[in-house]
Length: 317
Image (cartoon, rainbow, N blue to C red; front, side, top):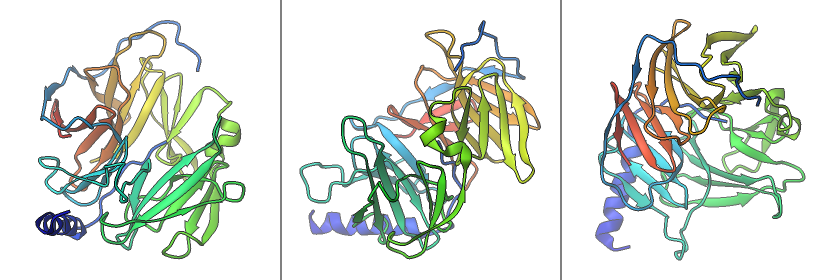
């Protein structure tokens, strides 16, 4: 990297540290007898606003850091960072032939402004693995470690961005980091619904945002409270959900009806126990949701990144 490029890179990354950390949505059947039409206050087909991007637009995860700063985890390796809400992006660590190439699936930030990346694989024909990476300089350089999956097998972040780092293992155990290097962990609780050693074989329900939301194939959505599961809404025209996210006083859901093919995917906005808006997404691909500090909803998948603006989906990456 040339000196001028390095200066711009450091200046760009330094902007990430400004401002407060955002809230975000972190994620993780029988067929219906017939397809039901959405019964909602409005059904809209969004106007797409396209923005030219590079050839590698597939995104695995998206982390809102502060008001206009987001970091995208690229599907084929590397990161893309914006400090102006997606108007401009800088790609980092995405060249496989270089020593600083970076690959993981999930990204978060802790209360000390340290970035953490996690990549795991349960193993099929290949050995299982779980790897953690962290950066104290906002993505410029990274350190790596690998877990012994026979002893400790984390597969996803459980904590919200800006909070003490917690990860959840395949058996549903939630552990909190006890140091700043990812080597010391303490078990703090177990989420039985997220025990993938048994629940992968149980059909009929699914969980999102670290087990904070539960969706039944009958169309019922619940949120977890200290007293148990509280019903949010019933949307009988969908029986499968991709993601759930709370944002700006509403709950958003991306779902579809798996009884037919092809089937439209819907973006639902839920408030006060009712589906207030239903947006028919323009393709049949799964999309995932994040909410930034300004209360703006972001969608992403292997086709890129969008920001919801009214009834438009603005193509940002």
